[in-house]
Image (cartoon, rainbow, N blue to C red; front, side):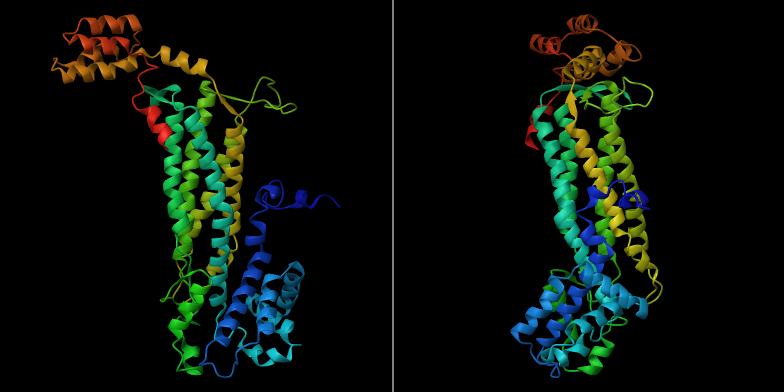
Length: 455
């Protein structure tokens, strides 16, 4: 039998399987079933602690421990049993309910509790909480660490190259110089801003019954304050309570999370394209690994494949993330099932995002700056000093400074001698002339060095 990864339909389970291993226990069907079991178990335990539910006595310590162990120790064998039950029920959440009952039926102390498994719940009560738990885990344990690692790498590079001058290009044309470090610091600042938003996106949850009104709850136990009970329960899972829903939690929180991750990916795509361009200009060199092939026909090539791979995977992830944020908050009337199949693809979007982070990190790790190429471009772009010259002329009230520099520089390059000759002809104070005459493209970087070191 060939390696199963060779037969995988999705590259996440084939070519890139190892790169998304951290997400597999969370977003796989096993991960979803395990989260459902946890929610069902915690709901039963919460019901048993409610004095108003008199038919369900408080559980013994051993019974509580057994229930918690059922959730904590849930494994792939248990998941396979749930799937076996589902072949009969043709309902995935009902199969989880029957699995839990099956596991507990031999315990006399839990006999009275069996029919309180899934009590007053619709499937979406369990599902929405399960997906929120899965997304919170993926965010906190996988996505944020990956983002922090990328930001840390870029910050280190920004500090290391804070003072290394580089010619800017606006509209593809030569522009006021910057430093390599400052350009990387810009990306770190953008990612930091999005990180704050990603870390604080609320993970809503609800457990209010068939259409969100506690209909069955209120009939069975009219004296229980069900909204307060539900709020306490959702909070006990570490989630944010949504008091107003239809049958489904409306997924606005998932949409918000997807939108933030999508913005992070867009920033990363912007970085990939810029680095790709700088490699093309020769500003960065890539380390060569023995045995690697850059082109199947051109032996000299060292292609920027890591940045291209990252860009492609971020793009795939964003296509799905965009669909999630547009589709999931929409449901016909009190419920339709279009969200069910879409939610199962959450792991695919975050998987491609994670591959993007991995490829980008690998590409950055291969880079080294090329100071000679940076210096050569700067030395060939004396026209960029037209900006400081005309700005100093403005300060001292000289006539038509912009127009004079435009006539001198626009559409054709000038060299150091021509610029200094022009400065010498100006009616400026001696210290201003000296300051302008001492400028070079490499020293005209403003506060870029300091800004890069502050990030």
